[in-house]
Length: 104
Image 1 (spheres, helix red, strand yellow):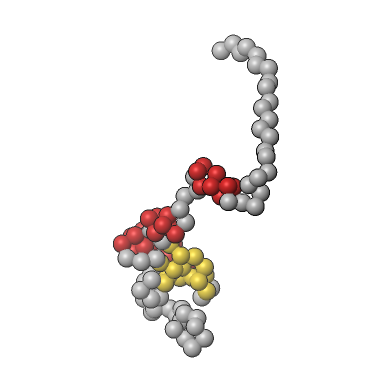
Image 2 (cartoon, one colour; image 1 turned 90 degrees about the vertical axis):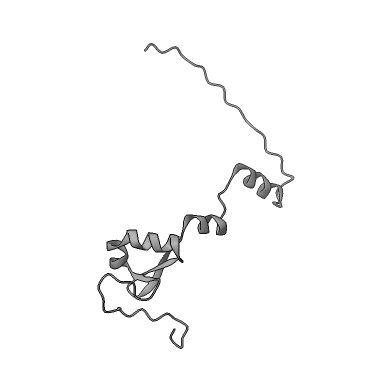
């Protein structure tokens, strides 16, 4: 790390290799995406830089789901129940449309 706290993203000197053990330049990550994914699943998240600045992180799906659980209908109901607007009644409106016969 540099004194400013920013990660040093110099080229490693070997084309296609990560700039460190988990930081890839975009062009290298694109060329070796299978390896980036394999490393993210087996070891740790892989960072990808664009023009020397960190842009995205590739993480294993299990890690992502642990950090950001999938949104379910029950989670939405619970969130609305804890909302300041929980006491507001919502009128459910049904629209009945005429159906017509269709010949197939």
